[in-house]
Image 1 (cartoon, rainbow, N blue to C red):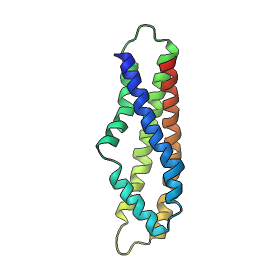
Image 2: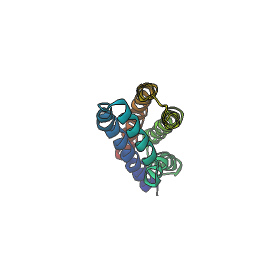
Image 3: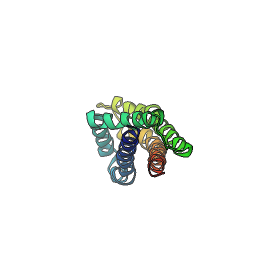
Image 4: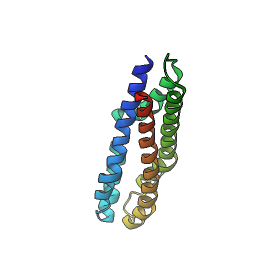
Length: 155
């Protein structure tokens, strides 16, 4: 059971890390080339589309599977492996904290600014630099979580 939980922790964290990394290295640079109006519209549609069932399942799995893998006793798992799993869990939780405290409020503010009197340039200026900064942090955290969990699994 513990081996399965650790494998699920590695798989879910890898999926989420890949998603955030592609967003960081491909999607945001592409959206950054759009006009202000096109950018804010595109980000609104992304923010409406992403948090659906599959995303939420992976988002939750990233925290649930590592802690479950840590808590289930395993004969033969070294202390180092246990610490790697715990560190991976901490990085995943910090990733979620950055998302919930940083990115999600910016997404909500961007959605709330939509209307006939909106200045797309002002909306973008209030959103893009801060959102990208938070996104870089959360991407680094989840990539670190993936590395730590992978190290524990091959350990």
